[in-house]
Amino acid sequence: METLDGMGYVTAGFSFLVLGMIVFAHAWYAFIMKFSVGVLPAVLALIHDLLLVVILLELFRTIINFLKTYIITLEPFLYIGIIASTRRILTTGAASAYSENLTNDQFQRYLLDVGLNVLVIVALVFAVYLARRRAPTDAAQLG
Image (cartoon, rainbow, N blue to C red):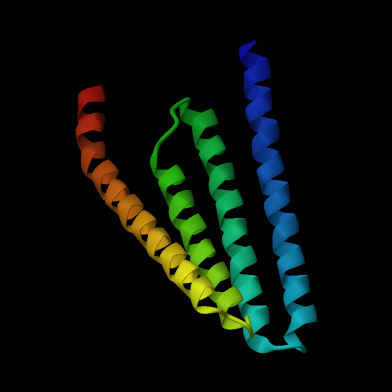
């Protein structure tokens, strides 16, 4: 059963790696195709897609580390949350910037969305700080 469990992690990790490579290639293809329409929308879409690639690679790396140590660490998931919130801010910002009929209500929702995502980022950065601060004492206890 442990072998099957390990195989499951290997196939999931390999899938994250392959998906990351596919998204990376598609992101650059879409960037080249959108570049003639407008530089800024093409760049924002590329950044959005590349941040997704980073998330997929972070998941891949987390699985690799788990297979090496059989320990799941918290930090990669905190990083993924920070990247995902940053992606959300960029996405809503780009959508609002290119919306021609932006109402006051939509703008207020945009500000609320951005504000909440900034709070999530601050909380996750604080959690990374706490996790790193605590890590040396955990290692000392193991040794």
